[in-house]
Image 1: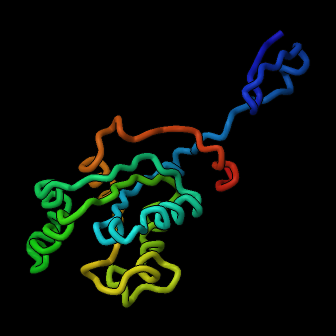
Image 2: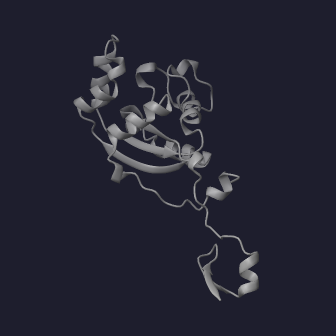
Image 3: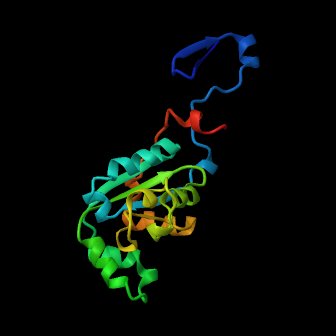
Length: 184
């Protein structure tokens, strides 16, 4: 006799015959290929306009898993490091000042192709070039107030997640909707 857990986490006792036929019963765990992460930050204009809930809802409804989120007044050094690749651009100082002007909501989302799909969901950097249905296409008008930041590559996402979050702030949990989003 052997006792195992079924999908509902209840004990089941099996005799020898059933053991041979039975394959491992596992709950819905994310496959390694579905654990890509991206960094998304709702900028001060998005926070001030009350768009946080709508933006989170879009990522959740798409099927991505939220693994970290915090609201904070980002420090100037943090923002300078975050935007270091834009340091030589004429708008750099204004961008850092603007991002420091109010609270931001920093998040880490996880899922299959989340970086690429997240960028599509955001829309173009210039809201005028963004399609309706995208976050910027629906909520923004000017580049300087384009609501949201999203990692542009898997490498950038790793750097940004590490810059904004400590490893212990990332929460790993079983999402009960996983089996309804992914085939395997």
